[in-house]
Image (cartoon, rainbow, N blue to C red; front, side):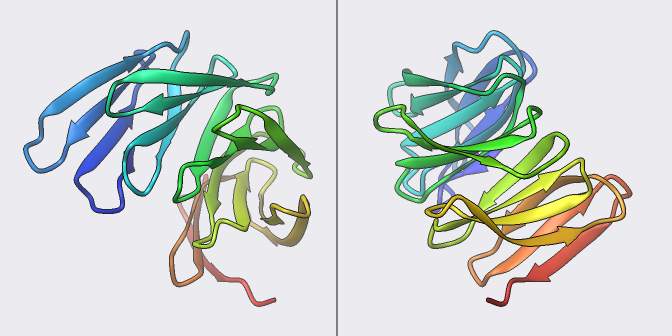
Amino acid sequence: MALSEDGRRAVSASDDYTLKVWDTDSGAELRTLESHSSSVNGVALSADGHRAVSASYDHTLKVWDTNSGRELRMLEGHWDSVRGVALSADGRRAVSSSADHTLKVWDTDSGAELRTLEGHSDAVYGVALSADGRRAVSASDDHTLKVWDLDAGKVIATFTCDAGAVCCAWSRSGVIVAGDRLGRVHFLTLVL
């Protein structure tokens, strides 16, 4: 599930291979987005709610115009399921996480893969961006959270959990929140 910055538009991902765009004021379904060939694991939405990027078990991401429901492009490069996606506020850069143990940084306008981030030793389930979009945090079944400098393509911090990390978020105030397979929630502040 993803929500626009103003909270008026939501996009949901589903095991039925589709996404749905919702008007949160009325609760009305605005449209269904169809094109994936397997379950949709995650979705991210630009701040204005007009662009979405979906992540799927079919090893692809799709970039969508949520106003028209049109698929703008397909992003290919992972060799296993894409488990999560984060999108910059302007919707122009996406970061995907995959069961292939990597993250990829994408230009959503051109569809170009900008870089591959390697460093995890197991599936990467979650990814989130810092407020300025310059860093990402990833959550992996290898029991780690990693913080990445996206421009340099390097890990700048690693946190170890007692179990696989399966989800993460990054607040505007800079707090990283992550959940693991033991049901624990971790709150971290990055000091550089």
